[in-house]
Length: 377
Image (tube, rainbow, N blue to C red; front, side):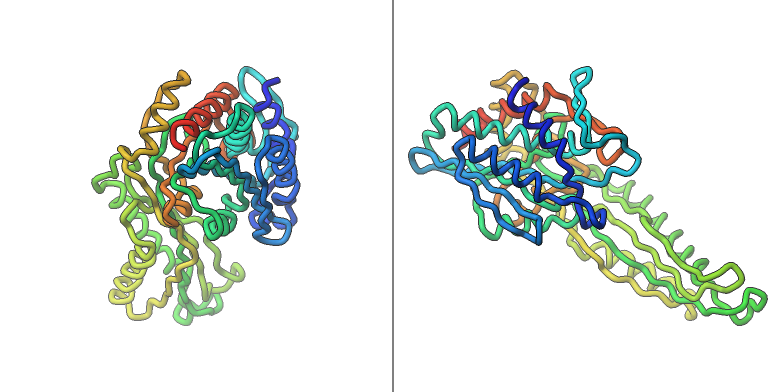
């Protein structure tokens, strides 16, 4: 068994479901302990940074023999939940694929970056520069791990080993969550003159949001990321069948592009509510910003993706530049002043009941990262 895949199997076997997503879940403590042991065994100087109770970042550092640039490899250790899965933490290898929760998202990338650093260390280390390997918590919810990482650690460039099918992603979309509360007036279901149906009034908002989504998706697209979009995520309202509902709530998500400010989603929703209030003075609703993360990109001709392109080609890969539709910790690093790209092994089943990573791509990712460290630092 290749050391990289052996490590991957160990990581998949550890339950690291994000406890913010699934209350009572195991969290990242056990996997952090396993990662710290492996990093120390590989010769890295290891720091364990507690971000929240039982939720530690693990950072390993390999110092070069002379001053040079600092390169960071970064990956998250948490996973989404396992509802509907059978034996999610029993890694199974079949037909060139390794199955299990987190295999693709993103323990395959974490194993690749860890064993890349171990290989560099075992071959005499870096002639120049510094390599930082960061395993962070909570990317699947609000990225408190990456937020904490950039307050303490700096680098000249970073690769986040999210699954990209070995494409080099130089940017990704952002997102914003907005809550809409629509007010009605409670009344007995037999007395329509006394009631105002908050749920039907929320339907007016939904119709306008659907039209906005259609408009967003017909606008000129970003060259790599396509268009913005939105969807209605959660709806609640009403108290009982025979009463007019006095309140209805929508929680929605807007996917944003580089250059769109974080306030975009709230402003768009507020325009809709203002228009509806002008059309019907009895319409009452409020919009509240819940949480947002910005989109991010580096130029495709930046030195980092160009150096990784050469490194990947050197080890037999077929480099291609792309963008990612999903949000990642690369934005946290990038907006903190660390130019960052995405590069990791592919597979299928992100957040689904059957998840796998392609074993050969994990190994190719590792080999490309080894070559990148040599060339960049």
